Structure formats: structure tokens, C-alpha cells
Length: 163
Image (cartoon, rainbow, N blue to C red; front, side, top):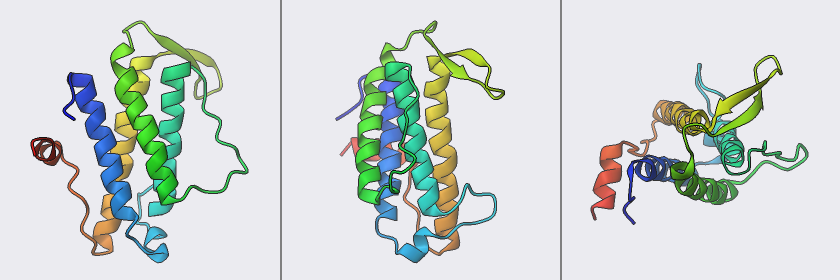
């Protein structure tokens, strides 16, 4: 399905890239999932969890204005659960992004726990930036392991859309 506007294109690529990386990582051994490199968030597995949980929070903020509360005692997600979570939040972001208006804000507890009004557009921007940064870290770890990373460029996305 081809996106119908600019925001849908940006968030469709975002979802596609997250899914491609998760699908590649589903092929890894437990030992490979534990790998990391200096400067990365953590292991491949921990970084994937971080991407998914953050996106759940971003989507909750955009759609409800509320923080997503991931239960503290919940077991870590499997790769399959992460794929399903990303499908849900990614699809949600595609649907919600065009609805966000310039003056739509949410209240966040800022760095010093002071409440601050933040434009929802900044949350959308952060969702893309955050995942892109951490996908690049995971791809660096894969390269260090001698594993070919998936091509997540928008050119590849375009080629796949065109088929």
C-alpha cells in the first residue's frame, strides 16, 4: 500500500524500517542478541526493547495525551511480541500523525520534573529520530558481528513500494 501524503510516507518508512530490522534480528542467536559495541545503548536485544517501549510511549502521548505505563514486573518482550507492538504503534502513528495540528500540545514532566507543554509535533519528530538513532546502533553491532544489516534507506523502501 502506497502512502497517500508526506506524513504517511515518513511514518510508513519508519514502520517498515523497524519491522525489517526486527525481522533480521529474529534470525540471530541468543548470543548475538547479547552483543553490543562502545557507544551503543546496550545489547541488540536491550536496544530493540528500548525502541519498542519508547514508541509505545510516544504513540500513547500522541493518541491519548497520557504516558504509556509498561508494567515494571512484565517479562521482557520476545522478538515476535516486539514485532506486533511495532506494527500496532507504527500503524497508529501513520494514522495519527496527519491529525496533529501545530498548536496541539501535551504536558510532560520535563528534565527537572517540571511540567512543560510540548507540541505533539515534537513527539512525532522524536519518534522518528529516536528509532533511527538506535537502529543505526544495532546495525553497527551487526556489522561488528560480520552480519549484513538490512538496507533501511528510503531508496530501498521506495523500490519495494514500486514492486
